[in-house]
Length: 87
Image 1 (cartoon, rainbow, N blue to C red):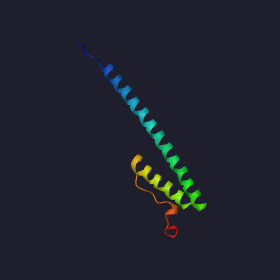
Image 2 (cartoon, one colour):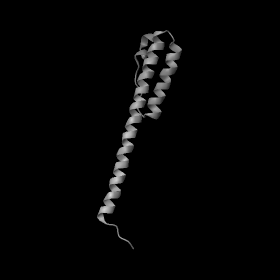
Image 3 (cartoon, rainbow, N blue to C red):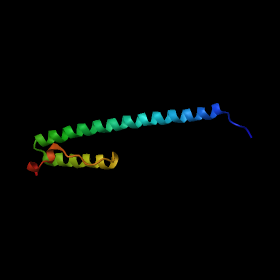
Image 4 (cartoon, helix red, strand yellow):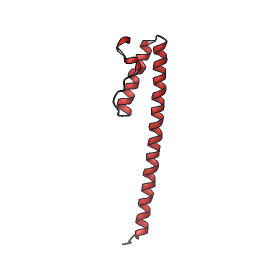
């Protein structure tokens, strides 16, 4: 039975830690990209609202809410277009 030295065992742990750090950086990169895309979607919703295309803005808003809830696991966020005057 071969024994592993302390150096070999700690080296494997360091490799796993590096992999975890790399994966967390990738997760953060994807999260940032998703948040940027949601900001662009917010702009589009505002644009269509300003163009009197309330149906398109409402559909995009529903998609945005679904993305936040299901993909990002975050609560819905009110939009400026969700005020009582536009209903």
